[in-house]
Length: 315
Image (cartoon, rainbow, N blue to C red; front, side):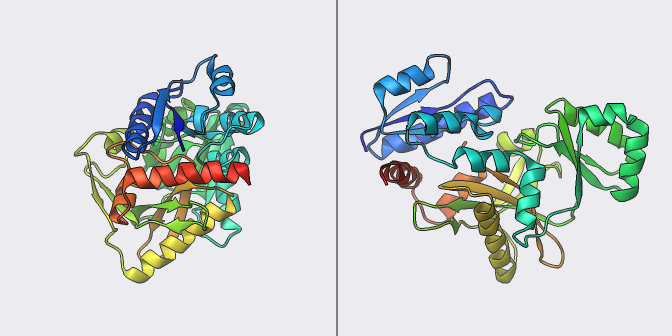
């Protein structure tokens, strides 16, 4: 492989995170001897890609601009090889209620939840809707946008009186809110690496935020969260969690790389929360930590995925 284009930035709420992820990917690929161009997408992007024909594109765009399947569908249409899940799998994973349904069909536990569009919330009467939700999903619950990442718009609700504010916060980031049963336990993330021989679970990363909540700030500000790799869970529980992560990755049809977020309860049951088509790849992100804990050099791992994308495009 001679040349790769890393796409980073975009216009989503996660632009700054994307720029940091993109720079880390570009530096890692360059260290492996690949000529890399880091590019912020704009109106000239596809004309440029069609004319310059890079060997592979690495979309490091977080948020809707890179993870909802639209960009990836255009790359497929243009016949340009790219790293990561294809457009169909991206659409499925991007929508959390859809992902939860598909993963539950693969016999992976996921917390009880309800998806509520903003229009229904207004038309049916906010108070009546919230009373009905409280009966079926008593607190504590987690309220989050049905689409999106980096914990933006996410609220842990311990008191029913806090639910209206949590709904407003979620709707700030999207038109559908997901209200989900809160599972008490150990929060872990399991990265998946698949360079063509099938998905392999990386060591679980245990997440212990100083504030008790793995918020946006806790994710991207050094020192706000402690990480343990591998996670401090029994070996048999780690095996079950790894199997659940691989099952989720497979059920959603993802490829190359993903990150599956789970909660392990006191009984050792892993509960699926969501799957990330593009894991964060910044200096504080979980996926690079898991790669390094598994003994992989980042440059080698990212170059291997780029080679897999190029190889698959020629098949």
